[in-house]
Image (cartoon, rainbow, N blue to C red; front, side):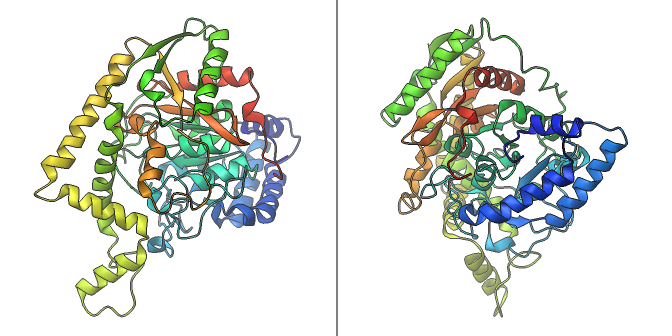
Length: 483
């Protein structure tokens, strides 16, 4: 039962082959048995899950149907969940129980999804390896000595290990797509504004976007359908009609114009990953796609621009965690200044502190124009590059990551080395574009992902291409040994 995809679960529930309650019990037992190896969950919600599963079974018995009705999922632990700990992977929020549900949580619950728990993540979503979590590192089920990617590494590891069929994640600079690539999953970052950010604890507000992690493009379409849509409570939500993503999966790729940027194939890319990317291009050509080389000339400036803008926004967003209203508070503060300093110093881990300091520096009076303003101008140039490219092609294809998953701890002494792993993913966040990573092969037994980018609100196009690719390849169906 644990091998079933979301789509197969929907069919099984509709055909009464099993109940949501039976499936939920099987997966909860599997999590209890296997997750100690992975550390992919921060909190399990067994009572809530069984209650939701029984309610879903009752709704089906009354004639209701729906792809998510009775389907088990988990939420990355920065989506607020009423009455349940929402920690953001941080000591700062270890004791925080949200008083309300995030819009994404509420929408998926209304669709009948069953919440099994909250997944581990890099602290405040800051990291590319899921090693900065207060609750310890998450392990990659393909090799337990390697990282699963971050910051949505808990969601990715849990789905890859078949602990559940799908989970939510968030993507600020690649935090859905990168762990998807490193764990052999399909992961989608929607257009900025497509999925509500209300109740999603912010890292960098102009970059953060929620999205689905699953084994197939078909499952991502189902989960995105439940997540997407306008939310009047979120000022960054865009009032754009949500298409039927599942209905669009079977479109022909005949004549689809694919652009491959020459800048992607630089010295930093593992040549074995480059070969797998070109193999995926050949597969799509067999399906009727037309491929041409394009250029994204300002891509070289993306990492420095991102690592000014994101920390600047983080330093502002995280100023609310001061030991006064909620979250961690130091013992016996001498005065208000001592309360602030020790609560923040003890509550935040080193990576979060590093980014707050970088952001505060970039926003300070003497450096605002030199760093933050210049980074925003580069952001605009990157967006213009994409707009010019999409006049010539329908999607852009390239590697998701320059390397396969690295060993736990290998980059801890050099944060910049970890930042460079985001080189292919952060441009989509800076421009607000939708991006998808899909499984495309293995290097040294570790998964490799190929990334697809599309114009604004063309998530359906990405899902269509990935689904057609997955109908003709079997990378996505491979399972890690022992799981």
